[in-house]
Image 1 (spheres, rainbow, N blue to C red):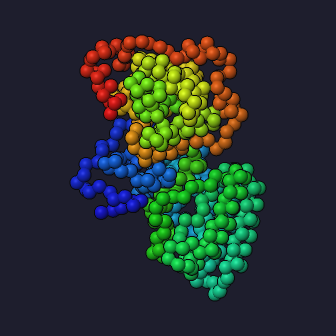
Image 2 (cartoon, rainbow, N blue to C red; image 1 turned 180 degrees about the horizontal axis):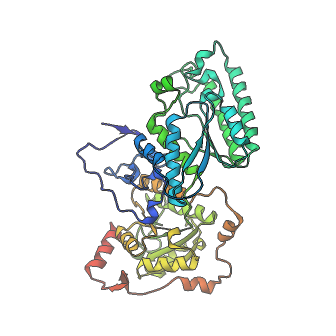
Image 3 (cartoon, rainbow, N blue to C red; image 1 turned 30 degrees about the vertical axis):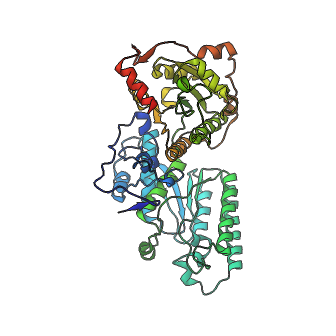
Amino acid sequence: MKTWAGIREPPPLMALPKEPQRSPAEAKLPFEYGWGPSRRRAPCDILWGDVIPQACCFGRLPVSMKLREALQIVHRPVRDQGPSYPVHLVTGFEPLHLSTFLAAHLRQRLEAQVGDRAIELRTGLFGDLGGNWRRALQEEANAPVVAVLEWSDLHPALGWREASFVSKWDEDTALADVAARLQGWLGILHSASRRRILSLPALPLPPWVERGLDGQYPAFSLELHAIVQQFARDAARAGVRVARPVIGVPWDPAKHMATGFPYTLEFADRLAGLLADLLIPAPPVKGLITDLDNTLWHGVVGDDGPEGVHWDLDHQARAHGWWQQFLAALSAQGILIAIASRNDPGPVGEALGRSDLLVPAASFYPVEVHWEDKASSIERIAKAWNIGLDGIVFVDDNPIELDMVRRALPSVECVQFPSGNAAAVAAMIERLRARFAKEEVREEDRLRHQPSPPGCDRKERRRTCRIVRGTACLAGRPLAPGSSEAAAIASARID
């Protein structure tokens, strides 16, 4: 039975959830969340009982493209008439399958955003990463540059193949050589203005370098990593997009010794997908609409009262505190956030006025609290924001409410809040962080972070909080208080 991140996969006879129907908005999402075309759900989206792999939350997820599939994508005829997309792939090793996977992922992303384009991937000389980097950045064409570093590029004694040409070496001299080489490359990066992507070494260091007790970090290894991290930090400050580490086993010793290509196919695919995401990021969404009960807070404010809903450790509701702090961070980045809740406005107003709320209540605009259907609320919020529905994410713990919004507004991206499962909440927040990610916060984003939109007075803010008493709606038609549909919604909310 296979394992992943220390979690055993379910036995083959266990029935996994079927592939859900994705909305047009969800179909555009990056591959690593398993939401793209022809992708199965990632392990984070599959609950095995109540267990979710922790590593899913903060890394690349193991959703693989096969080499055959990548070759088919790369070699199929180009359907749209347009210029090719040139990219420099700078490595010191033989890029081989990494270049194939990168071209395939880039073509998929271009097709989703601007149309089908041929990928013109330019590589350099084997064993000359510095020279390849310099030649790529000195070309007149403003093509982006992707550099994938490995330890052998920094010093031959750190390479599994290259160390055979080193008769003797000492740690202090090697560290000085690595620091000098990286400093020279940093100067090259500073001189270029085009898009630059950097991937840090992923292969294990050879055992003649990793001296020390089993499980111990040797001082040399720590110093070496510190030099590389400082280089990555300075490169990021110079505008280089530094890739996060990729989850998975990177090294294929047999392939590395035979061909000079060091990676396993699965790792090469994940690395290529990550690099493609950094080269052609998905357009960020502009606004997030959240539910309240069992989403913004734990509990039902209409039943438990304003003081009976929680988001703290003492009441085992810290995951809802995470959600509030994440919303506060989004608002600080200029992301629009609003509330759409089927609730009584009185208790909601008191709960939002609590001093221990971790997101400023003034950050929410508009606030739609009433008993009408949420699809109508989302349409009014989009109108107030003056953005399209395809730029909105709606988060709710109630699957029935989400289904009604999907049916009425298929372009809205709907996400279920996994109330009661802290690991799943952390994974969801990490996915949404990527959806709303911005490379920098601009002045217009800071203006958007103001408590009220420019020109909006308090009277206008009060008007946006719609109050409809004693009425529930489903798909635009009233529901009787005791009807089966109303009971189903109430039951789903309680669950």
